[in-house]
Length: 188
Length: 143
Length: 101
Image 1: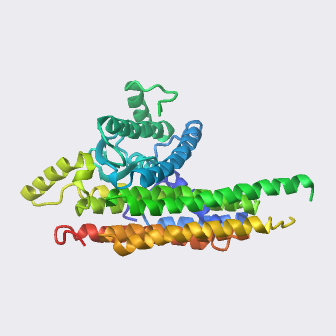
Image 2: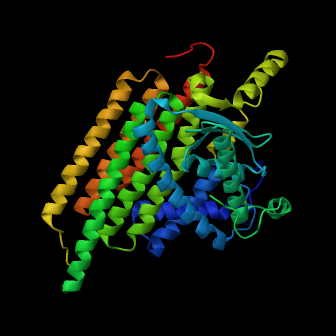
Image 3: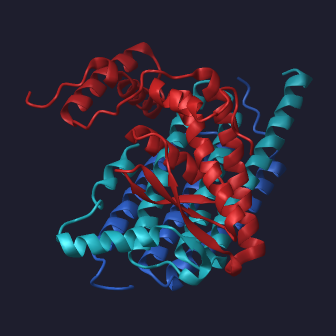
């Protein structure tokens, strides 16, 4: 093949995900079905080639679980917040588009941050500048500079949390050099 | 069946009923947002967020009612699909909306993208080539 | 397992309440599709309408305890996703020629 070969290790998370989806769609997690699913997954990953997602190679489960719980709570808060604004503020709502520079330059990190940001209260990604890894975020109900600073802070907190879960060592060190406590940074 | 089990059943049924009704209310919240908000961008918030929570609640209700363990990974996969796709489609619609001037500047308290867009447009006019426009595509699409 | 069908009154009540709520929501979304000033508003509203249909399918599954609609549900969300992304791309490509639809 003329294309750059992807190592099996880089591809493994994708294959596992494909097998889980296969089992879920057949609603059958018996070993035979999963083995056949794995064969289909390898064929699909070989035939429908995509640029590999560069994982950092570390994943901190202990930090991922609290992050997931906080994330779920924020999803609930986001919906209630939007409903509240829709009913009581309605047409008079004020918004802003904010530029938030991110620390990390890896595509995975920027994408993950963008996804999480889109699901937590009052923010939505409008535009991504990949060369400087800046997210342009549309904030709902941002009336003044204090709200603006809060939104920016929230985005950077989210990125810090994601870096602690699955960032590279270099990103972790940059985070610590910035003075983030290694335990918990989220104040909100 | 022991009385204890029927007691559990009643509790589960009550929780399911609450989950289903709150889940349906989320859809109603999305519709109210669509009707009440003044511009496309705010409507986008209303269209995406309650949808995700509503599906979560309703899927949790299904999981409770089925009372079998293998259902949960299936439901989780269905929800994760939603989690991965909703921000992407919202981003695509929002980006198209910003570029086709669907924003109402009088509703914004700040717009930090405008200067960048103007600068990029100036560069495009002088250099005659696409600025960082197609590059950001992959970053938005990669799940 | 003994299939206890739950109390029928609660079941009917939940079905009626959710049906009314979802109908109101669908009416709102359809209204936005009808009047929505731009194409993107309509796309957004039809996405919400699809989500409401998905919610109805899921509520049917929860109340009647089956999983037959699950694949349909996943397909529905994928169709909504592909549809809105396609239209958004199309609108973005046409920028500069038409200001507003």
